[in-house]
Length: 294
Image 1: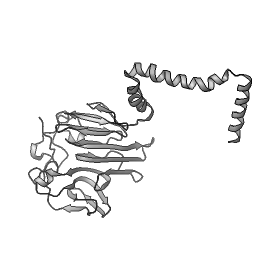
Image 2 (image 1 turned 90 degrees about the vertical axis):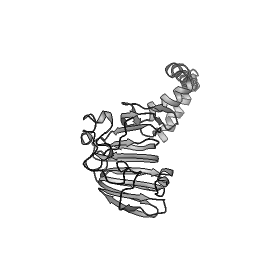
Image 3 (image 1 turned 45 degrees about the vertical axis):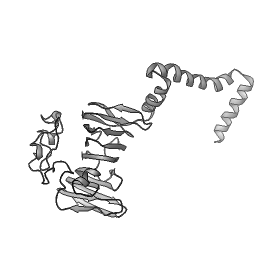
Image 4 (image 1 turned 90 degrees about the horizontal axis):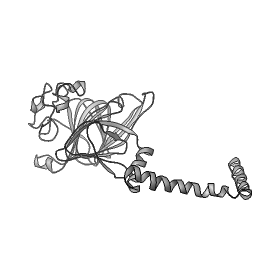
């Protein structure tokens, strides 16, 4: 601090003897700010507001979390400044993005650690944090499902002891250890099917811990669970909920990777173009794939 004050005092003394340097200190920063905002920014983005609100935060702050590998219908992303952009196959997804799908929309995202998320129609999903160390020895994931449903297979993050992973909802937080699971937040659609509203989940592989203010539940492969509120304990379901979780619309577990659609997966995954475990369009073994082609 003493050195900083000394340099500052010397600069002031120099300005006293060379007044022209006062222009450099006061006017130059203002001049460059105005020039880059209203001249270069307007030329690049079409208007200064668009430049400041969209391009500049993207250049300075956004970290790539993943990439869209399939998109059907209307799929959008809203960044931290609430600027909207339409997502299609090959587009990047950034930390801080809030993704939305329309009633006919659906998207699959492959993350930087090779994790996968399949976002169902009428869903809102946010990538709060997604980062992995340079040596790929540890990582941190924080995501949030606000409405709708998703299915996810973890990548490298979630398999190691130093990893931190959480999937948040309004009624509970999920932690995992090397897993494949599905979640659905049910509202009126559950009531219509005779089930209470809340969070429903299915574990296809690995371990999922579900925690809220009432306590914690742990669920493993081929188990279903439900949380009807943040003040209610997570509970295991003895039978799959009909019309709630993927692949169980008839109320019975799917088998042999076929599901109710007899192996009709997303078009670009049905011929081996997608993840290896879903290469034949029939979904992961034993749980089926509920894709409904238009």
